[in-house]
Amino acid sequence: MQVIQHVDPTGQTMVARVPKQGTSAIQLGSQLVVEESQQAIFFRDGQALDTFGPGRHTLATQNLPLLTRILGLPFEGKSPFQAAVVFTSSKTFYDLKWGTKEPVVYRDSELAMIRLRAFGKFAIRIGNPQHFVNEVVGTQGIYTTDGVEAYFKDVIVARLTDLLGENLASIFDLPKVYDELAMGLKSRVGEDFSKYGLDLVDLILGAITPPAEVQKQIDERGGMEAIGDMNAYMKFKAAKAMGDAAQQSGSGTGDGVGAGLGVGMGAGMGMMLPQMMKEAMQDSGQGGGGGGGQAAAGGAAAAGAAAAGQGESSGEAGADAEGGAAAFCHECGGKLPDGAKFCPSCGTKVAG
Image (cartoon, rainbow, N blue to C red; front, side, top):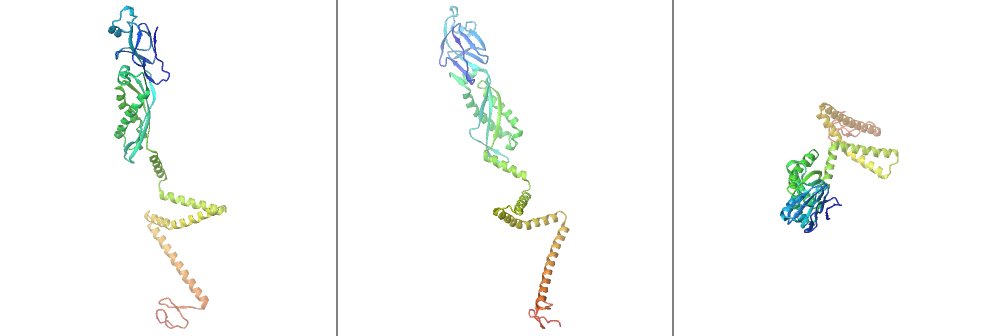
């Protein structure tokens, strides 16, 4: 007794033909064994005649009505006939991968033109065995998921590119539209699968990412936003560096490099202080403290005049200490020689 069956050790075989090429003589009364996750299709002369579901089937006239009618099998159903059996798997094939071979150019509202990569997974099963065999497999002896994966991953990428252009303004909006994009992509691609006799069970949108250099720039931009006021941040960093240098110098543990750094930071801070004081004066004036600013300016002028007065007084005292009582012209302020009646500088008569 002839037994016809197919067992898939790999788990990736979608269609298997017995025999792999052509047809063979099959005796009526032979046993056909179809696994729970299979269907078996009888082919003769290039036509699908009968389909068998899971179980053990005895090939007899009552089980092959179409074939019996074509051949007109008499003689107690023992005559052989030339045919082929195609086993199709009805299981779900998952963990099939799709992704972009080359980055897709995308117009972003914030980053202008950028290149995007995308990848994910999908799961399928054979929904219409005869249609799938006739449209895709043909006369191949073995057909695995490799062929489906290679073709449909390009189809998915093409549909995703169109979907992104219609529904996404910027990649910064991706986190809130991932589910919507995945559902929309599955809906569009499902039609492409069904016309080949396949059912798209699931489609997962793994990630959509820009190139590494763009991601680095995005990270830098995020760091700048986290800093906030760059001017205040730079002042803080300079003050902190000066404090660290002063602490090392005070502890006596700083080396020559540390001392040089302290000197450099001190000089830099000395150059920054006037600008900082100017900004502080402007801020106080603009914030409603204009009178205070003028008072501060007046105080600074008074302090300068006092310093000048102290300088003149010290100069006069020095002159008295060296040559006794010194006399000065009341007009130009020049020093008068002893006994002079006219100022040698401006010619003004000296009061007696």
